[in-house]
Image (cartoon, rainbow, N blue to C red; front, side, top):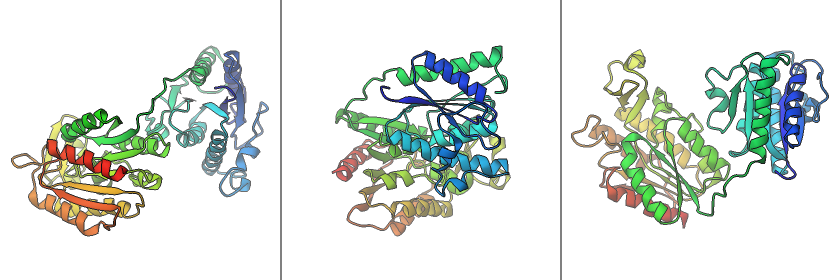
Length: 404
């Protein structure tokens, strides 16, 4: 924390007194605090250390693009982007020890957008009036700590003082606390689903014995996003994307999509990349009654009371393959795709409920047809099931090959 400060962020035209109180409490804990104003309407009620005009200069299209909107929604969007760029520059300069913000829905949108752009591990505390509802749009796959304000962030009273003081104490503790050194073992990201657990567990065990630290992500949408956020933050140096099932939900319309940006960060960061087809036989929905009506005539498998799986068709498998290879074809770093010919999940094997030789063949053939093979971008078919021990060994060997 030496030489770094906590940046306290608020729309200081309406939350000036309250964010100043947070700063006062944090400073009492020995923390340097820098007040940042992201107000978009009237003048600040407390003098900030960094004005909205200064922050606005960091908007990609210039200061004029961040200020002057009469529409509140447009103003919030514009200042959000300026704040993210400003904080990124301060982080790069080594000035930021933590972030704390307070606000209603508008202030939360501004601060959370900027916080999501910050590196994983940088302390982030956000006191919000909307923190007791669906926080996924604000947190996504980032390590943002949200606190419900209980009362509105509108003045200081016996409740708000306590909540805001707790937030100040929390960010002060985070910013000044020590974190155990992660060590020098190279970190690898791996994706897993229940139906690929034997494979990923075996791969992890082998790589652990070889000196790697394996970070396993549940491929539930946010899992894939979190993995790629860590790649983006240079905290993961290689990926074994064994379970690419989130793409099924993105393409077909399931509930566990990681979004259209899945795979992009891995390609852009040029880390060694091994890809497989784990659980590309299924699209995920909630309870049986939640499955959209257009899928009622499809083959559905009730995994449990909360999860219903839908088998992908040959046409969907081809589209999924094209979606993935369109990303991989942009790669400049080594990429190796391994196809398990005898099934891509625990329930995609002869005698199991999702076994469909025609759909699997369509998936495998479309991968081979659409992947632009080069010296560094390869694809291999193996006469194995995804959960066979030999396939796990092949994945490890593939990673060692692409990692050089």
